[in-house]
Length: 471
Image 1 (cartoon, rainbow, N blue to C red):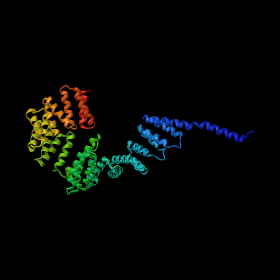
Image 2 (image 1 turned 45 degrees about the horizontal axis):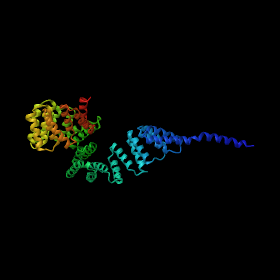
Image 3 (image 1 turned 135 degrees about the vertical axis):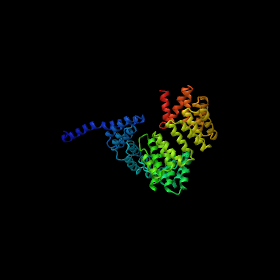
Image 4 (image 1 turned 120 degrees about the vertical axis):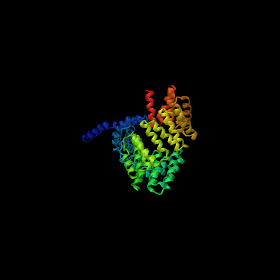
């Protein structure tokens, strides 16, 4: 007769086995399902399936990492953080997605901590790239510099890393910047135009005896290549070196306006810095010119005119100030005074196409003196600089404004073929097509501009024309 003391535990064990045996099997089913969903890029579903598999396989926290990666790829980063908390040891991919998650949520401080932790286990270019972006978002130039040096160590052919490092060094250690910039250009020709501009500025600043003014020169070059965030750092460094450097204050104000405009957010206006600049040197034409730009952007045209007039008084032979005066008068509606100022600019610089082009464009935009002043001015500009896209564009605008559509189209077609990045020509070509009733070609030209410059002034202008003519 069986011993009941033995039989009862055996029965209970059999019952437990009957209940628990399906659990590993079901976990395997969920895992297979998760992997299929992940391959199909149904990441939200895959995340749920991985999480269910992880619950049924509590000894496998790698499944929680897979769930975290999947849900992060699905865009649910808060859920990703919850899943990643279950993982005791992340893989390289896990560290990457944990860093991405914190960055996407705007927590750049934590992303830096996380990515540095990951780098203790993996000497990874991907982790360094993310860390570079995190430092960039925190405006931590020294941290970003160290990361870029590691990226170059891992990949000596990374042109972007060399270029970005050269930009940072333009502020941090200008004497070390050029070698990295030139190497970037040698690796990727797309960087060459910007590198040449920065090269000229670095050579010029190296010859300047004043350290503060050297940094102003470097900051202006950074602005020229659209690196206004770094330009701010350069101008702030210039002010640290000389608190009464009026040009540094004025350019800092300009840089803050540019950053605000590029971000699309209402940031610092720059007026505080511009006021400090005029306090330190009220006769500086640079200060007056930058203040005039500020007033122009804010549609304060009397103040704009006053600033340009002061600049012209302090530097009477500079045609740029006369052109600025012409622009201010035109915006105030005083076309007679504007015309006189533009003509005076051409008298001061008769061999510079820029001012002949500005005179021609003024006539075209306002529909005045097209044949006797505007057209001869545009032709003069093209004669002086036959390969200047701005001069050719000015000629086309005069043709367009005077109803010579065939002439305008011919000039503009040649222009966009030779200079495809000159976006204003594409817009003028679209207007020419519209004037001729060629709607399909106009639509094509406008959509091309909108695609090329989605967040810029030309893209916005193209968008307005599309809304107007193709609602």
